[in-house]
Amino acid sequence: MAKQIVTSGIRPTGQLHLGNFYGAMQNIQRLQDNYHAYFFIVDLHSLTTHPNAEHLRRHVIGVAKDYLAAGLDPNVSTLYAQSSIAEDICELHTYLSMVMPLGELLRCPTFKEKAKKHPDNVNYGLVGYPVLMAADVLIHKGTVVPVGEDQVVHLEMARTIVRRFNQLYGNVFPEPQPLLENAVRIPSLSGQGKMSKSDADDTYISMQEATDAIHSKVKKAFSDPERVYKNQPGHPTVKGCNVYHLHSFFTKEDQISSLAEQCRQAAIGCVDCKKHLAGSLTSIVEPFRERRNQITDDDVIEVLQAGRIKAKASSEKVIAEVRDAMGLRMF
Image (tube, rainbow, N blue to C red; front, top):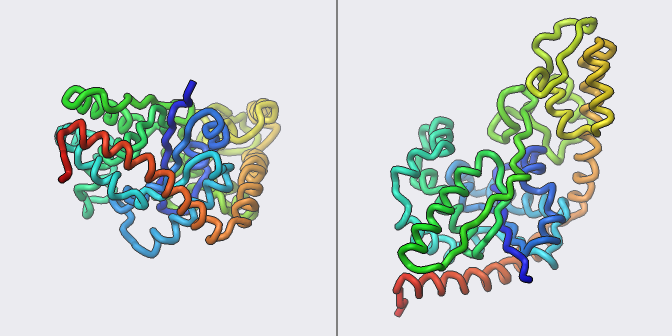
């Protein structure tokens, strides 16, 4: 039985942080073992909010290093930059936009959120972001998509596009299914929302963070707002303490239970609890950082060039089928 096709991309908008890693990269090895996998760097998408050319050049290389450090095997999976098959992606995006009502795009929650964050740059690309995402998936006829919480609505829009397109032109595309086990929401160190590169540097942990920087950031992390003094019992629950919430993702279960019990009995203070958390984070970040530092720019360029060839072979086949279904003869 042929493997299903999984597609997964990440925007090159800065350093990978723990939230990105757990949402997009933690399970790379399992995905490439169980699926026919296409991993890509969505540099076209990044232009909606990060149009700096020099940053884009640097971050594309950086994200590719992240993928490889996370365990991606270019001999098994396909890794490429979205722009390297731009002619096919953008062509398919145009066709898909013809079946996507503007009103639904304007009502998209993530569009409203981005428009509030970037009120001076509410561009067409921001509105059409879900359609371009659908093109990313459908250009390889992807059947499975790992999604974070904020991307679930985009995937549902992609499924809607597939149904409308197929109704008009025949059974061209499969409806991609969400891989919800990746829908994690790593809390910010500030206690406000999830970790995000758009927020202040001290609110997230980069996967390139030095050990002393991890300890320094965690030391300042928001914890239990109701525990003022060490001799007061704490509230070690996901809602009661932000540091405990972070422990629930990164600390071993037996250690979490012990820390929670000590916290409830006021046998341990927030300072010591944060030291344990910093140790847990370091045990994840440090080996990743060391693997990444061994990967050169030349290594990455070679992988991306080979990936472009494989991705292009797939995208050309699909776009030809789409043109034929739509009656575009391309004289």
